[in-house]
Length: 241
Length: 241
Picture 1: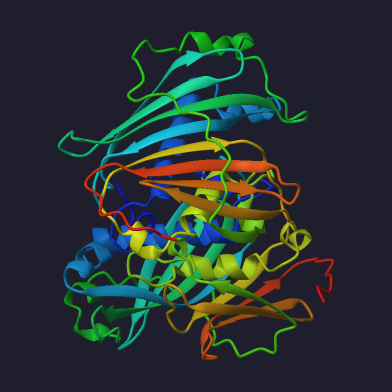
Picture 2: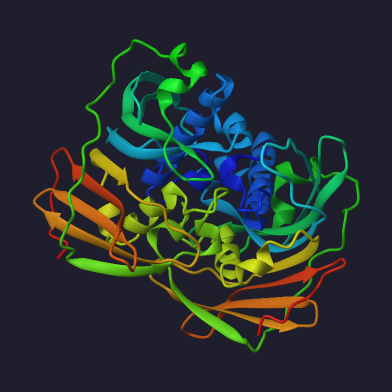
């Protein structure tokens, strides 16, 4: 059920809350099948999300009950594909996503070969992905930038900035009128590098036609995270300048 | 169960997560008894938290199961008292809190007289509060300040800054070494005024002996929120300067 803390002033779940829901469900599903971080952290391994493609058809309201389905249908050496669909109480589709994850060694921070994870293959599901795989997002020339110093509450149990915080930093750059639009949207995110406590991040965005592209870089000019938001239907599009 | 997203780098629940738990439980309990915000928002009323006194005996670890008990044992014209205790799986006490709430009219933003809320009196519980009531916190002369502009993700469904965000802003000012201390602590919070999207807030803190005091003010020099954190036991106390 969509909780009061999950919605914004329009009383609908935020982009960040919706991504939070699927990350929670991913964790519960992986733990229940013996390859979740509950087991992995004991073995100094962990999952890190690499890319996401997200279709929002509408944003559910406070106290709506939503049903989320998740399944893993593919994996290679480096990445595994986890899918999500979300329906409302009338079983109308409100969201679909394809996410790609790597498993890393917590000491070396290097990816592990997923083909050697025994528990994994037996839980693979044949059902195809609900939307296209996420794409590589190009660098941008930002029209607007903001600076953020990574604080205590930005970092999570693995001492790196929490994935959701990058999305929050990007969304917070937009004029608020922009975020109150009820339209459906397509979002893609590439998580490229980790950042740590005290890092100084520059968040920038560029608007071209009906698409916003974001990039977060550190002081060494390394791209940490890129994302794009595309409003999909009957949008009265405003130029944000 | 303490979720991975609720813990910090020490793998223990954060102050903000712990307060989040009790706010969630308060909402569930009030809704189940017919005086929660689910019903109140339809009638253009809402609860706002005014003061909190919180005793943290220890911070639970990731994946620990905790049990939270809540009860309302007092109310007057303006404020009602809601209590919380938290125990771990071995029924050892890990947390206790006393919180005071006002009910406001969402149009006028003015408090309502709780003595006229019929549903209320029948759910009053005789059990006494687990710790002392929260106190009024005095103004401070800050030794250190930071500036924060209220963003989209700071505000919640009622268009005001979420209570938990004030705590996050305060805690994020502290040197990180400070937050990794395992000691128990006593926290008090006074929520004094609301702030809105775009407001410029100044967060300051002052250290005196084993106590930290915080104050958040807006540009008109009005105090929005004050808090104090006191480390209670065997603390190797550092001066934060």
